[in-house]
Structures are given as C-alpha cells and as structure tokens.
Image (tube, rainbow, N blue to C red):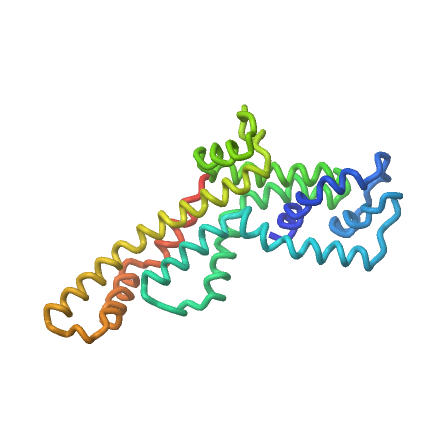
Length: 255
C-alpha cells in the first residue's frame, strides 16, 4: 500500500502543489517520486532544504492513518472483527494488535485491484518521469474515487449532497471528495453494523438457551457466560468461523 497511500496523501496537498510547481518545469529525472515531489515545492523552482522536506514528510505521515481508515475497506473490516470478538464473549482474545493486523492485511487483499491501478497508472509512470505530479495525483484520486463510489449508498450521498446544498451530479465522477468521503464512511458504518448483527444472532441464541437452562435448574448464581462461552467457541470452530468471516468480508465489497 506504500506508493498508493502516498499518492492518496498527495490528494490533500494537490492545490498547494498546483500553485507551487512552475509552469515550465524541467524534465523529470529518475529519482524517487516522493523526494522529487517535495523537491519541486519551492516557488522558484529550487529544491527545498532537507529540513523542510522532512517537515513536509512528517506532516504527511500524520494524515496517512486517517486516509487508511477512511478511504479504504479497513473501517468495515475492523468493526466487524471487533463485534465478532464481543459476540464470542471474549474480552481481549484475539488482542487488539492481532485484530488490527488482520484487518490491515485483509484490507490490502480487498484493495489490491485499486492499488495495482494506482501503481500502474500513476505511481510507476511518475517514478519513471513520464507524467507530472498533478497528473499522478489526479489518476490516483480517480482510482480511489471509483472504489469509494461503488461502496457508497445513494441515500448517504443524497444526505450529504443536501447538507452541502450541491447540485445534482450527472455522473459518479462528478462527486467531489468533500461529499463522497463522509458518505462513504457512513455507508461503511451501516454495512459493518448490519454484518455484526447477523454475526451476533447465533451466539445470542446460545446465550438465551444457556441462561434459560440454568434458571430452570435453579443455578441462578452461576454466570451464564462461563457456560455459554465453550459452546460458542465450539460452534465457531465447527463451522470454520474465521474462514467464513474473512470470505464474507472480502466478498461484501463491490468490485
């Protein structure tokens, strides 16, 4: 996700880049894409000093986690995995680090077509000096825009379109990121909670059966969670729950 995420991060600084890069920029060399992007930020065409380049890079890195969370499949996946852990009655198993790592690598799998498109159409040509930074950022944004549009509900788009008092969009490509991003996040939250509800149902039935059985036996002082947890774990293992969960999550994203 490295080059693709960097290209996505450049979306936030595209206006500044467009104003800073001279109109008659010299031919692009074969140096690193990120270094060259920061080196052309100087208004007089001279490369920025090392300290300013480091400052810009550190500022960009503070934005990247938000981009990974809000512009990819990570949000839906981590929420579903967290709800699954709660449905099983487990407090810290798997640990948060395991869930985040699992969600991150599953996000890489889901986002693979988009990342390949960004790498082939934007990052790789820019690294070879074939296109300018503005064109690379535009191509990267178009790839992410297409992925987010497919996952966003029309009702959420209309909601934020109305809040922004924006005119009707003729094509999905006309939707600006300022409207698409909150609509995409809202849709992801809705979908994640819908999947979480379906996951909770079988485990809730087990909790009800165990609680009713203990009450009928007069064992009201015994916590139903202690008895139901082994049965829930057994059910989850028998149905190959992790494979079903991962497969369902990966298949829930429109391509």
